[in-house]
Length: 177
Image (tube, rainbow, N blue to C red; front, side, top):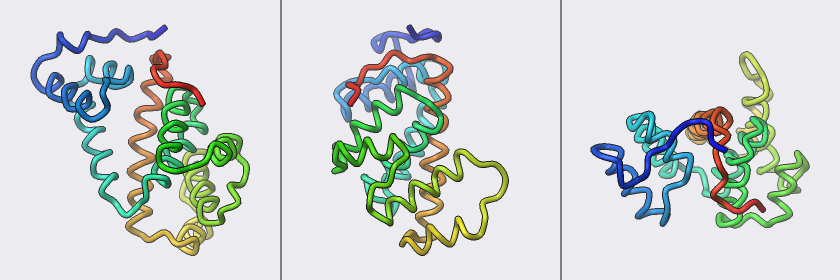
């Protein structure tokens, strides 16, 4: 059961009402995470959605974006986000086997994707400045410096959502795969 309160979407006014309506138009529903964030910080919800919009226009493929989000969610232990990003990864073209490999910290057998996964894990799990080798490895795998910034933005957005869900114990409204 969620720990933080949420308003009913019809109770929303102003910015949060506009944001909820936009989410519902795009997704057909307002996920529990967004209800929680919007209830307590309409500006925070607007900001994270804007950040995700910026990331979606980056040079990073939808599949890679979902890989990043899934790795961050697995590393942080966010059950809600693991379910959401597993499903979105499937819609972005990843196979069930690839998703399970990522969730289980096993090789996807795609060197470029494995480099991305390792890079994200090193950022999320480590402390301090990344080694030159970490940065060189992601560039050698074919990611541009612009994409590295996009990866960083994706991690930041995902960590925020993960943190809210871990605090809230958000009720899952997506199927677990």
